[in-house]
Length: 130
View 1 (tube, rainbow, N blue to C red):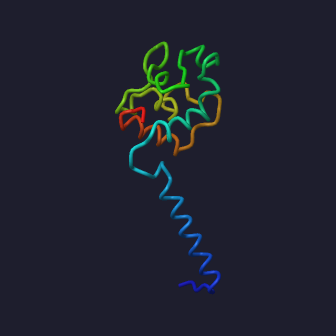
View 2: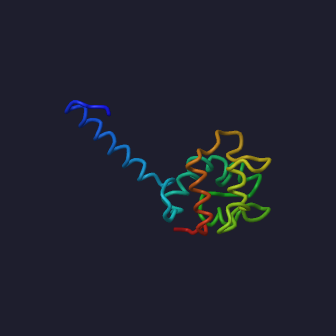
View 3: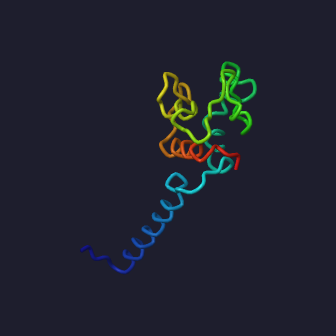
């Protein structure tokens, strides 16, 4: 067993409590309800809107405008990209997870595993506008 002096023990205890708080507050580790506004839209805003907004290349080519929930649920000119309750066949999940010939974000760094998990969980929960 490792013994710590008084000040060092206090520092270790504070770091452990802080680290535990960070892990338990992470939405990706949380099994509760995923919010479109609080969890999903921030991912879309920072990783997708540069191409999928009015007048941008991704919207012009596919018809997918991600500026609003309604635009996301409408999908592309080819059809919906979300099948509420089923992330296995939702094209959004298929493309961000790299299970299709075209990966999104296109020609950019992949989404991190936490963001992918949030999107997957949100679709699994019904893809609600909450």
